[in-house]
Length: 305
Image (cartoon, rainbow, N blue to C red; front, top):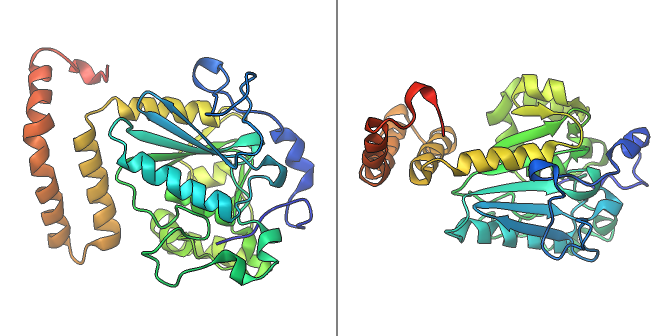
């Protein structure tokens, strides 16, 4: 869990806020509307989470721009509900998580936390959700992409780590900003970050709480792609559309096997067995039809379409 970066919090670099005061654009440069949005493409007021289905792509937007998308209990519950529903929906293949109003997420809402830890209604058992930030304890079976703009700090960083891939804008800032306020990482930050970028680099960020820019995040492997400001959502949706065009059973089996080998496997042999057990059923379902398409001329020369 991690704190909000509201105006009253000293750790926000206020001189950068104006750069992010804009709405993100979707496919082909058109406003990417969320369900319940008004006619100009901006998210409707009063909804802490806004969503949209666009073919096999599902977008989930944190919609509390007045506090740089800091997450409170209501927002956490909505995020967990929406991503859980996405994972169960057979018509959807890839989700994109983003923030409205120019910031991804500034962490947990410190104003709510200041009322006392009882307001969090925390459960000791991590198998019982939602987590403080909402979906951070989930193990999704489908790809999730984070479109990161502005601040992705503290618990917001932990939400970005939930994603399989992170598309990051040039002026975005990531970091464990909760360090200076004594708020621990209990939304997977100490679990996912070392696996993603290595223990030494993870400890650097965890211990110092320093800000990390987009290019350093790319060098670390924390960001997968850096795009110009204002283009993270569009680029993430385009990436989601590309990924959703591939045979999905095979893609999910490979990705889930990689996660198993990273987090759950007790040995090399066990990881190899898991890969084989979950890969073999795909051969009949997708590999044979894929080989038939290839024999007919599809995909020659490395073409993907």
